[in-house]
Length: 303
Ligand code: R5P
Image (cartoon, rainbow, N blue to C red):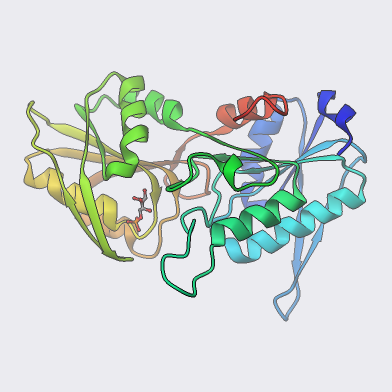
């Protein structure tokens, strides 16, 4: 990367089709258009990626890595295509960054996916920005990425939404959700509790809700990820058993599968909202302001 490029303000924005709307919102904050990265799928499943660039510049590529396997490969191709156009500072904005949970080999013979993905993305991009990366045993992305890497929190953005919604209580499903639940609750000026959770399989979860000491008519469950939905479902059952009448849920990353939304409705979740990190019918909360702010941070300013 040419160091002089870090001082230039112009950014060129590129996005894959499923992230184009969010990218347009972010790019508009820089008075720039968002350019579509075109993907052709051959009959054998290979992808051909094509970009249109005005040449040497700083460029942002935006793509969330839900359903990550083919998306990762296409991202690396997009980075290659932009480098060939002469782009000299390449920034990946991946609102949802996959494979961050497998940060060690839990059983003999397993790959450490987090390190593999960090190495591949870090080699292709100069800087990586994501939202609420799901980190366990490392505190910061910088510990595994060979390039600048930063996870920004959507807690304030969710908290702003939560403040308007006006629930009596914010509920985090497990100890890992503590910092998100606390930050959302503080921003919204609400009390919060955090459950304890044990997971015995992809779809087997038990949740224990602490005693509610104040009258609680309505509660908002907040979590970073919703996937199978069983975590939110278990918390909803616990809240109903505790007499809570109105139960809603908000997640940052809506990775919901198959029957998750039906199951949540059956469990008594009246409404479910998500940020637009991953395009989903529940998207109500825009991350565009947060991502634009993160992009305005100069290189080296992030931890
Ligand atoms: C786990 O620690 C995460 O914060 C989420 O609670 C989890 O990924 C949700 O997954 P699921 O919807 O499959 O229960």
